[in-house]
Length: 324
Length: 276
Image 1 (tube, rainbow over the protein chains, first blue to last red):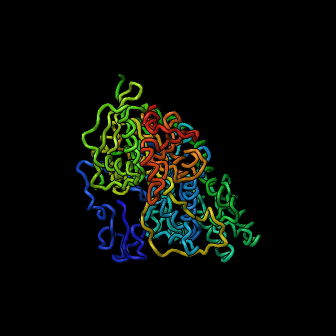
Image 2: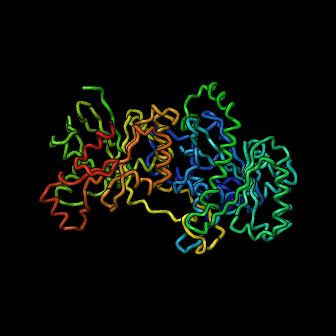
Image 3: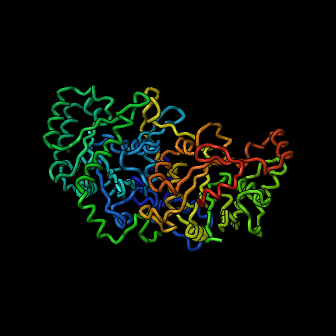
């Protein structure tokens, strides 16, 4: 069910409903879902309702995908304002502009509307300004799973990129059992791979304090990693040269110690020229690197999965759950 | 005569379906084209209005939604019986699919029964999107947004969603490559584009992600991108253009553009492409 709130500044459905001060935006009188808005248009009897809505998926909706393939979940981990949501926005923007994930052509997505909201934040408005995304809501039950259906040679894979707020990851990095960090726990236990964000600007401005926070989160990420691949992303890397060399070297040393097989990337959402690898190549390379590593490690499992599966079809909407 | 084939025309509002059908019907009725009309349908009101406009050298009006009746034509192409269906001249139902996220009963039946889809896209109406990846950052002010964005799909995403939803209604998934219908993307109102590109190049320029998605899903033999200018030039407020139509008659205008970028005056061949 697609929708939006008529109150300016309300964060529903991603965050708290401004009017009800809760997550119950569906009962708020200012909430309009498209089905109600369009109720004047006759809805025909026997219409087949699509089992996906275009909005970000929630953990309890994964059966939508589970029936056709075992999805790869990639968790976005990082401190507040580290650029996790903006990374996803730029990833989609690059795909939108025709860029490809090498070896993994895009076949579709169940969450196009959600991707579009992320990408809208990177659109340039007529006044030359860009609306960066509002901070991702920090409630413990807030999940945003962004879907891509990809094809690798003849194998189709559903990929879910799991976003959550940096505040929740801060809580989790201090206490993995924190009652307000349920979504961080879910992402950590269910992800097949991780993108770990290092905020270059925070390191420039907050120096040692930012570094300590990053290392603490990295230690928690490394604690029960069990060989799951990690891509370490220096975000806002157009500012990376402004980080004090000793801080950068010390952080790099800590990360090398914690993640021996990690690959490092530098990304930026602000290209300095027509083709800037920090933006146009590296954002996509992060995902491509993780997918290739996962594919290699899972090759044997993948064959078993396919041969025993009764669902021979990579269907759009195989499940028959009727949405009310 | 071999088994019947079914061709479905799909297009959003004002994508050029009615003008094509008017020109198509005028040509096939004369019996001079490759495609022959086996019988005239009972109700061609919306199409005949467009035919009348064209024969007066006027631009056909956009089809009103209350004229959204289904048009079915029974055709013969080289001995093949072909049913051409255009269930929605106005295109309102197509827009509703991705707005309401549902496929009504008529469309379910149509997509299930057709193995050849003609998707009309009026590329000249798709404006470029400006985002950070295509602009140097010096001119940009970075603001934090405090406004929740509305869920509005871009043209590009709405076409992907449309294809996904129609395949869902057809009960076909991308793993069933052999079951996918033949898809012909038709870049309509070609004369509005004013360029020397091939239809595929236009699609890549206007909807690159959509092009990537259909190329990933479809086998090359079952996917084509063609161009169409059913009218050949605009007729609005142009007496010279109107005179040409009055003098030389509508059936002598219009062309389709092949994959290689060559023009073919026989626009009825579009249907032949759809069933190849």
